[in-house]
Structure formats: C-alpha cells, structure tokens
Image 1 (cartoon, rainbow, N blue to C red):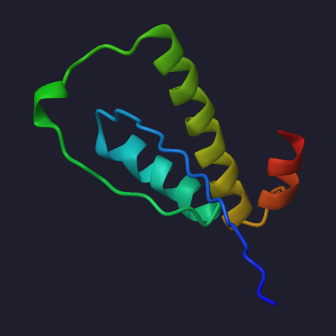
Image 2 (cartoon, rainbow, N blue to C red):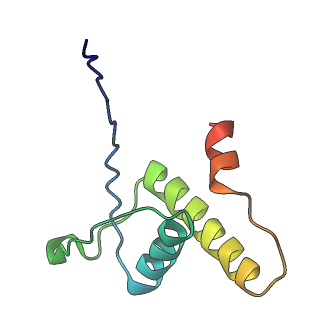
Length: 89
C-alpha cells in the first residue's frame, strides 16, 4: 500500500526600487538579518525618480529597520526573532 503526499510551497516576490547605494546597503542588511534570499538587478533608467507616498513609507520603515540592525550590532538593543515577527503578521 502506498501513500501519496502533496507539498505546496508558496513564495512571494517583492520588488523594491532603490535609488542610492546607502539605501541598497541598508535593505540588504535587513534581508540578511532575516536570512532571506534575494536578487539584485540594476536599472539605470530609473535614476532620479521621486518616491510615491507608499514608496516613501516603505523606505522610512526599511531605514528604521537598518538603524535597529546597526544598534543591534553595537549591542545596544536586542532584535525580535524572525519567527516571532512572522507569527505577529
């Protein structure tokens, strides 16, 4: 008697448009801190584009996260475990 198993894997793709190296470095630090895989594509035609309101909100949140990672590395704060964070979502 054999049993069949079905495994479903869901992945989400997030596209973030970054216009400077400092921000790119901060975003990469956040993704690395969560142990996430990511790809980087360069799009030179988007340089100088102003951020929309929603993009600005995302940028501000990521910048805050990068600042928290810096404080964590300096031993000034303790970061929440990624699994705890995901459970809150």
